[in-house]
Image (tube, rainbow, N blue to C red; front, side, top):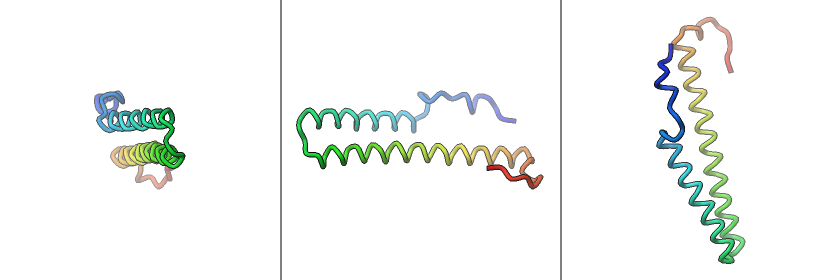
Length: 87
């Protein structure tokens, strides 16, 4: 089966998660600063779009990684050979 040490990793120990949180925080702070400073609408909308793409990319990346790990676990256990479909 799976070793619990591999899956008990907290998000704060993940370098990818910390990088995502840092970049997301910087974009939010910049958006707030640009709003206070009175930047043009284009700059604020571009910053929000970048933040949205970053969020979406991280979530889709995690979802695909989770699916890959689940399929690898099924294949490792040998239950994937039974012909049943898992989604």
